[in-house]
Length: 504
Image (cartoon, rainbow, N blue to C red; front, side, top):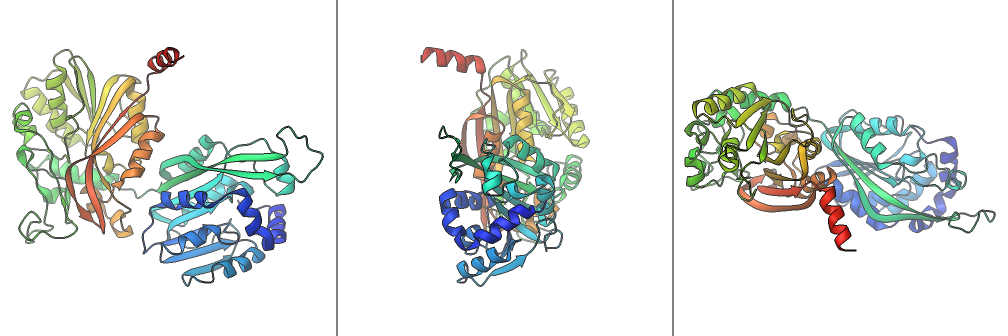
C-alpha cells in the first residue's frame, strides 16, 4: 500500500518544482470538490495523506481544528512547511502510507489527492485510511480515471494508469465504507510527455478526467434502532420514551398533529412556550380526511416526518412498496388509492411492527396489503416488481442509504417512481451525536446533509430528482434538521429511445 521506491525517488527529486508542476496537472476545483464532499466541522481533525507540498492541506486548515500532513518524502514536507507557515494548526508526519501514525478511529476525515495511483496495493491503502477514521468519519479520495497513457509510469513514476470508478466503489465497500459516491470533479489532469519519439496522434499529450470518491465509516446502529422501535410497537399509542431519551424523537401524535419531545421525564416539552434549542418538531402533514380513511390503530401510531403520498400520484391498479412500513399507516393510505386492483407491499425489519401492521390489515379486511420482514438494504422483492416506492422517515435510520436507493432502483419497473419523506440536515452532525444510538433512533443523527442524500439517489441511477421542504424541522448539533420529500424516476429505456428517435 506504500509508494514504490521509484515514486518516492521521483517526488524527492521534484519537490522544489512540484508546485509549478502540479499547477499544470490540476487546479483548485479538485480541492474544492474534495472538501465539499467531506462536510467538515470546525472541531474536526483531518489528515491529508500523500500531501506533497500542502495543496489540499491549505484548503483544510481554515476549516478544521487540526490538520495532519502526511508524506513519505522529507523534501516534499520541507516545502509544505514553508507553504503552510501561516497556519498554526498543522502537524507534519514523515510516514509510509502502509503504517499511518494515528490510533484507530482517531480522525474525522481523511483525504488523499493524487496519491492512490502511486501505491502498490490501493485496497490496502484504503483500508489503512479507514482504520484511522472515527465511526461516521469520511474518506475522500481524488484521483485519475482509467487512461491509456502508459508513459506516465516511466516519466512520473505512476504505478496505476488511473482507476475504473466501479472498482473504486467496490474497494470502498470492501473496506467497510457506506454511502459511497464516486463522481466527477469537473477537472482533468493534463500532462505532456518529454519523450520526442512518441507519436503526435494524441499519445504525447494526456488529458485525464479526475474523479472524487467519498465514503463513510460505519457506526453500527441497526440493533439499537431495531430495539427501540420494537419497544414502540408494543406500546399503547406512540410512547416517545421508547424511541429516544434525547431531546428529539420520531414520534408523531395521533391524527398527524405536531409533536416534539422534551427529553427525559420531568423536562418541559419543547412544544411549550419556552422552546429549547436543538430540538426537532415532527409533523406528518396528513389531512384529517386521509387519516379518517385509515384504520384507527394505524392512524394513531404515526412515526413519520411528512406525507410521501402527497404528490406520489398513485393510480388504481399500481403496485406500491413501502420501505420501513412500521405500523402500516402509509401502506393503508396507499391501498385506498390503488384500489382492489392494486397491491401494496410493506417491508420492515422489526417483527413487532410487522405483527402490529398485519393485525390491523386483518381486522380491517385490507387483503391487497401484505407485510414482509426484511431490511431496506436487501429488500425481499423481485426485480422490477413495483410501480412506486415510498418511505416515511426511515432511510435516515439506515447506515448505508446508498444501498437502500440501489435496492429501490432494482425493484422498480422501468419508468417507476420514488417518493420518500425523510430527515436531512444543513451540514454534518458532531461526532458524539453520530455515535449516539438514542440520537440515531430519534431520526436525527443518522440524517445526512441534503445534497449528499440527493447525490446518493442520483448515484443509484435515478433521474428527474427533486426535493422540497416538508413539515418537520428543528435543529441539532448546531445544524438545521428538517424533512424533505424527495422524488425521482427510474429511466425507461424504451421511452428514452423513442424520444431520441423523435428528436432526430
